Length: 84
Image 1 (cartoon, rainbow, N blue to C red):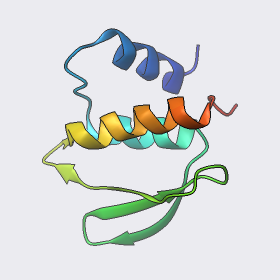
Image 2 (tube, rainbow, N blue to C red):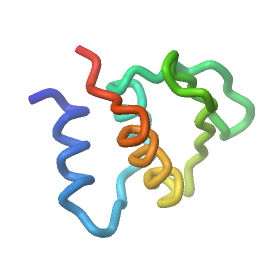
Image 3 (cartoon, rainbow, N blue to C red):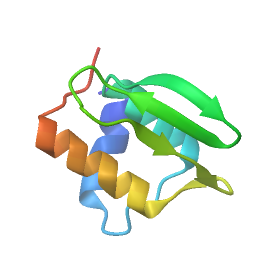
Image 4 (tube, rainbow, N blue to C red):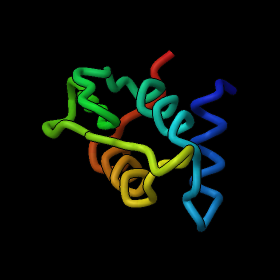
């Protein structure tokens, strides 16, 4: 099991949805999102199958919970899978 897969399984099993900002970026890249733009602390990721751009920014070392939830929604809505 790859690191993005382990992170994803841990998120699905957890109710708190708390992960570090680096782990969120690992998940985004693992699901095929590519970094398109960085402006200050904001990073914009795009996926070829997803119509919207995902913009994330850290809160200290942690990812913001609503951004983690949004990524999980996009994975489900678009049927995204881990890219090997």
